[in-house]
Length: 255
Image 1: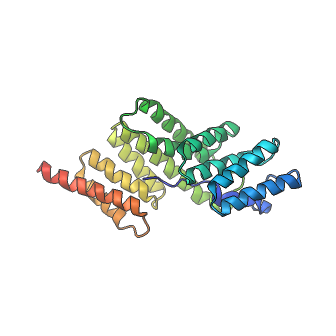
Image 2: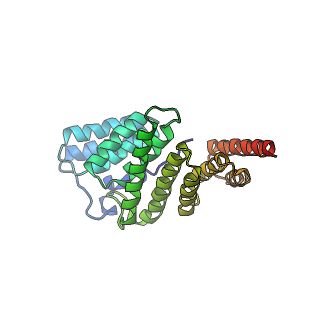
Image 3: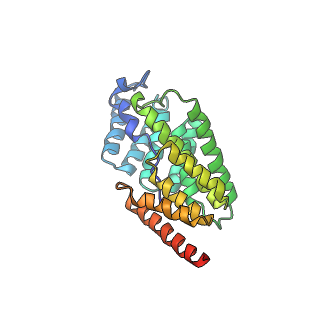
C-alpha cells in the first residue's frame, strides 16, 4: 500500500510559465530551452522513463543549468511514479546533496524506505534510522518554510505544506510500527491525520497500529472510517477491511 507523495509534477509549470514563481530559473540558450521542453512533454505524457532520460540529458549537457535542483526533484517524482524504488532513492540522494533543504525529496525517501523495510531485514534498524532522520529533518524544514520551493505556485504551498507534514509523520509512524513501538506509531499516525484529514492511507495504518496494540475496538472503528471514505483508493479500503477482519477475529478470541 503505497502513499502517493506529493512530487514536483504539479509545480513544474514554471518551465513553461516562468512568471508563476518569484525569481524563476531561466534557460541560458535555445538548446537548453528545447531540452527542457522535452522534459515537460514527457512528463505531461506520463512517460516516466522518457522524462528521466530527458532530465539526464539536460543535466549531462548543460552543467550550469539553473534548473538542476528542480530537475532532480522531478526525477525523484518520475522514478516513484514508475515504481522504481532504487532509482527513487538514488535520485532522492542526489537531490538532497544538491539542495539540503529539498523537502519533497526527503519526504519521498522517508516514505519509500519505510514502505520497503521488512521486519526481518538484517539492516532494518539502519533503514528505520534513515526514515527518522529524513522525516524529522523535513519537519524541521517545514516549520520554517514560509515560501514554496522553486517551481511551485505560491498559492498551492499552504496545502502542500500540510500534505508533506502529514506524510512525514506517516513515515515516522511506519518506522515506529516496524519497531513494535505501537503507542508511538498511533501518536504519529494521529498527528498525520490531524494535519491532513484526507490522508486515508494514514487512517488505514492507524487501524493496523491499534490492532497491533490490541486495541481492537479502536481498530474496528478506525477501519470503518476508511471504508466510509468514498474516494479512498481501492487498495487502501482492502487493507482497512483486512484490519477490521483481524480485529474482529482477535476480539472474539479474547473473550
